[in-house]
Length: 210
Ligand code: B12
Image 1 (tube, rainbow, N blue to C red):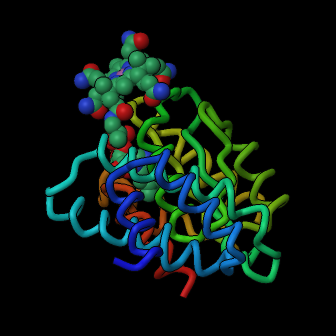
Image 2: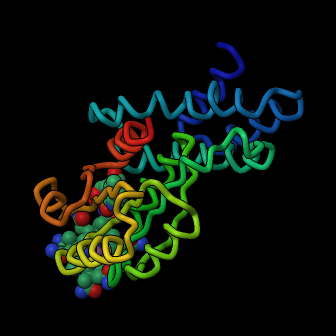
Image 3: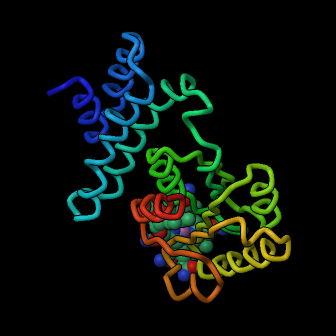
């Protein structure tokens, strides 16, 4: 097994200690940070994605892989120059106003980051005005909203309405997710897409940016 394959394997296994150790070793021996990311860290998530989709891996295991990956990313990210991380790939994400659930949203954040996106996480209980301010500040092209309550999912519409009022709707694609949300609700409120899970979010974001 090549050394990068060992790193990928450690990500897949969710072994954060090993990921940190191997990543640091690659950095110390002068490997290109982008190679460490693409051939090691992201390659590990590429093993995870189809297994999760096929029901061979479950949420806690995926979270361990994503956490292990983020430990490696912490080491290499400061070494990446602006030319490597395109600002055009910025995604704003948050759990909508009144809602404090963030486990699923955090998983989406980790998986999107593993896909090389620059994710600005606004946290939980995010008011429509805060989404709007963040779109303007970061010149984001995608906004992701999460809601776990049937009451707060209505705040997705409030947020989209404000994005419209502020004249920003043509600039951004809007993705929604969370247990009570579905495709028909997404269509009803004027979102661009609904994703059932974090892997689908990564696939859709990749498609929207390409
Ligand atoms: C954990 C949990 C909590 C924790 C939250 C901790 C945290 N930090 O998130 C705590 C204890 C705080 C909590 C509180 C409450 N909860 Co709660 N909670 C849950 C529970 C058990 C699990 C949710 C979860 O994390 N799922 C796992 C994640 C991985 O799945 P997920 O969130 O769906 O995310 C995936 C996808 O949906 C998608 N996705 C998610 N977000 C996004 C965003 C985008 C952009 C995209 C593309 C995709 C995407 O990708 C994710 C990963 O694959 C659910 C029950 C359930 N089975 O859903 C109830 C549940 C959501 N809670 C419920 C309720 C009622 C409450 C409370 C009102 C309880 C109370 N009386 O206080 C409060 C509300 C607090 C508030 N204001 O938000 C109800 C909601 C009922 C309803 N119809 O609205 C549920 C369904 C439980 C139930 N059966 O009654 N809760």
